[in-house]
Length: 94
Image 1 (cartoon, rainbow, N blue to C red):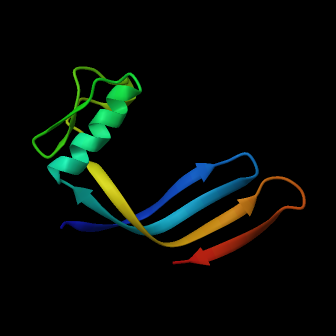
Image 2 (image 1 turned 135 degrees about the vertical axis):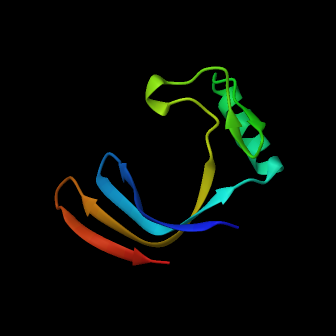
């Protein structure tokens, strides 16, 4: 597997902002790619697995032209900051 360090994933939820740190690796397993492409297709984007990546006839202009690689993240830590009262922050290590 091709392991790569990454800075983090972020998510802004209703009551908390989260940053997840860890290691990402490129997924090339056909069965996994097909499962993800099938999920996308069920949501209206006709994606398919091809050549170790995800591809489709069209995509959002900001995504650029495919194919698109799929990465799986193994988290090592996360930081959460509450955006509502009583506010506060915490860190998790995995």
